[in-house]
Image (cartoon, rainbow, N blue to C red; front, side, top):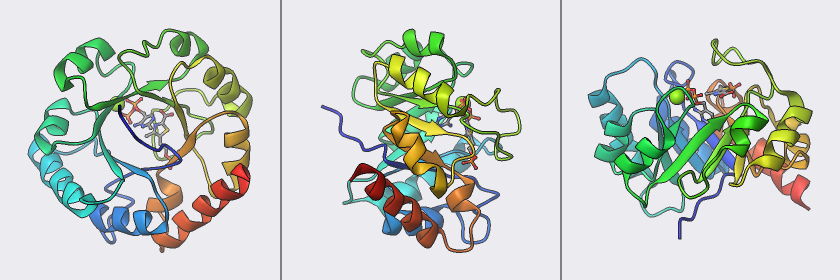
Length: 211
Ligand SMILES: Cc1ncc(COP(=O)(O)OP(=O)(O)O)c(N)n1
Ligand SMILES: Cc1nc(C(=O)O)sc1CCOP(=O)(O)O
Ligand SMILES: [Mg+2]
């Protein structure tokens, strides 16, 4: 049985984390209440991805936190990551599952109700649903779905969901009310002077919303 908690999903960005680096940003975020982290670096080599991933894995050793690798199956396997996240245009989810084996967590991006209905819950473990709002972090993002769009998609997902795209602490209650199991954020944590404090704010908002 795979166990993971999507409540506060940190997606790392090497540029936004440049001041203290991705590993120290993740360390601060976990101290503040993050539950899962994704290594996302669109402009690096597989070797560099593996090096950073191994450092993240070492930092997380002994905790319940999960490490997910974005896009790069080879790196995810070499790191011994807990999971892989892919988008609709990255590769077929069945092919990804065949490559990573049955035990690794597989996350899939979902932008529409049709894609949500098409998820094979025997293959995919969670869906990343978005973008909820426009964001500068991913300049090539799809048309924002808004909170109503999020609710419609989440309802059709046969797997747990994490909302993504332009999310800040102030959106927490609305995102959870829309039915998502958690929030995935980049700039709300990575782009701040105090990533631990920024994470605490979101973690507190999640606790409040779930009361
Ligand atoms: C949790 C989560 N959800 C969605 C995405 C976006 O994945 P994708 O559409 O493949 O885009 P890139 O991140 O690869 O640019 C994500 N990474 N994480
Ligand atoms: C990596 C990513 N994927 C998205 C999607 O909609 O699939 S939006 C996004 C970036 C989210 O960054 P921020 O929290 O700074 O808005
Ligand atoms: Mg991708």
